[in-house]
Length: 405
Image (tube, helix red, strand yellow):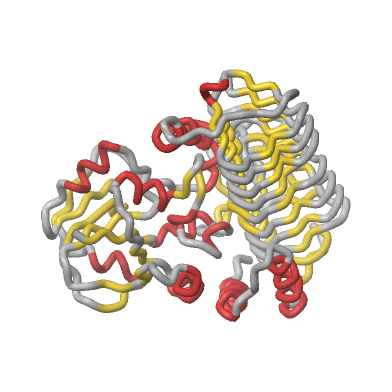
């Protein structure tokens, strides 16, 4: 039996983060959606169907994966935005040939023998048109980015239980480190925790992955995940529901926020109930609002429909695409969506929706000149001993063409 994870047409629901990655590579809890699905099904091989705009960079970055390719063999297709659990896993494994599971208008999984050839996410729905449809009783898919923020704390707890609790734990701390409820703390190899650090796992687990550095006098209140090779700066306050991906530097005050990877928020300032992509840099004393003064639900600009919609959540901060920077003392309003490759500065409130590749003050934006953006992106990646490739440059040019004015 072969398994393939596919992005469907709802990939645009998760813009700006999915402008530069598959839906399956969104992080929630400790793992990405793709990693969690593969684990539940016990899969070692990664086969995916993604959009045409992402195909080249995924082939480049993941040479062992099978990308946008079908073979004529018995195959189970799994939606990459699946909220996988034991129940839906059993249902998918029991699918008979030429049938699919769905809820409302969403295909969760399907089993068939496709024709060999190329397949793109844009065309995936056509593949399932003639399958026998079996309806499931509840929704099993992620629909909006703000759902990840709302459920992140619960998923950290779940992932800790499923993937870390019984894993080899190199728990050990230096004198002067305070750990509350140590049985709820997992520390990876070569993690460095400095004196004065407080780790409070009373309300949920704290996972410090391999090569993490926690600098002096930081406070971490679980559930929290700090990814491999990331640094928590001195005196930082990391509150519950925060997931930090690999190679990030995080300081100041952070609550209920997800960082994909390679993102820096090194200085003082509050960031709450937000979702940030990769290569983002948050300037010193940048603050965001995650709660309205009237305590009503936050409305968020929904890129797929080009308008603001009710998130259904009282706490929503900001969503920031890859390679975006904010200047010192920037302020960001509740529910603000900021696209890919923006450079924002000044004293004005950043609010509502900022299109990709915007430059300047919130009320006086111009287009970020392509060559200047690419030059900066290249410098940023070089600092991490990585290279901005030709395919990445093409991706950013294509994102610029898409536009979400």
